[in-house]
Image (cartoon, rainbow, N blue to C red; front, side, top):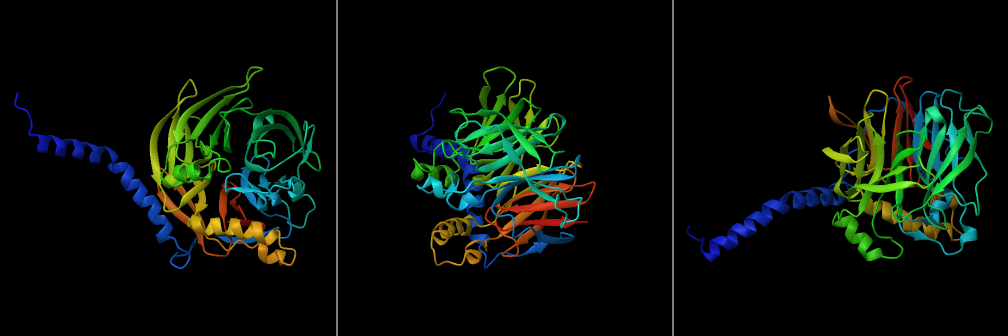
Length: 395
C-alpha cells in the first residue's frame, strides 16, 4: 500500500482535527457574539405579553427563582436582599457576615386580589438546625408530598435543604427535614424533583469563583464542561449522589415530562434536552440554541418550555459590582442602588412551534432569571436577579 507523502499526511491530520473541533469553534463564535450583538444600545425590544405590571416592588427584591404550583394557584418565590453582599455565583463575598441579611421564601397567591393580606406571605422556616443562614437560589416543589427543595448558598457552605411545606397555614410553614452537602454538590444552582426523595441538581461550575477566579473565567468563557447535572436519591439513610452529565455552566433545570429533562448551559447559549433512563442516568437528545445566556427554566402544563436569561452578561457584571459598592455607601440613595437597568430576555419553546420570543427589555424590568406560567389560568410571571418586585402578566 502506497504511503501518503508527509505533507499530505500532515494536511489530512489537520483537516481531521479541524473537522473535530469545528462544532466547538462555531458554538464559541455564536455564544461570544452575543456579547456584541446584545449590547444595550443595539438590543431590539420585543414584548408580546398581554396585560402585565410589576408587582410588590416595595416588598420584594433580588428574586432569583419562581415556580408555579397551579394545583394550588400559588407561586413560590426565592428572594434574597443579602445577594447584594453575598452571591457565590457572581463572585460577591462580603467578609462581615453579620451585615449580610438572610433571604426569604415567599408564597404569592395569584388568584387573590393584590391588596389581600394573604396574596403575598413569607414562609416561616422552623426546626432549622445550627446556624440559620438562607441565601436561596433554585427552588422546587413536589406537590403530591408537599416537599420543598431549596438550593441554599449558606454562609457555611452551599447545600440543598429539604422541607415539608404547609401551605394551608397562615403564614405558610416550612419544616426542615434534611440538608444535603457533598463534594458532588459544590456549586448547586437549580433543582428538578422526580418525587419526594429523588431529584436532579445542577452545579454551575467545577471551580469556586472565590478560590479560583481565573479558572472560573476560563470555564465560563471557553465553555469548559466543569458544571454537572447530579442525581440525588434520599431513599436510604445515606444520600446516594452521582454526576450523570457534564455541562458547561449548568444552570436551570426542569422536567418537560416524565422522561425528558431540560438543562440550560449558560456559557454555550443552549438548552439541552436529555432522556431520563431507567437507572436515572441521562442521554443527550437534542439542543435548543438561544440568542442570549439562559438562566432558569420552567415548563407549563401544556408542555411549553419557558426560558429566561441574560442578553448581555457584561452589563450584569457591572450591576453586581455597582450594587456591592453602592449599598455600602452611607450617602448613597438606596432606591437608585437597587434599580437594575440591565436587559432581560424571556422566550418559550415547543416542539411544534419552535423558539418564540416573549419579552426583550432594556430597562423596563431587568436581570430576568426565571419565567413561569399557569397556562390554565393564563397567569405568568418573571423574576429579576437584581430587580425590585416581580413582573406578572395575565391573559
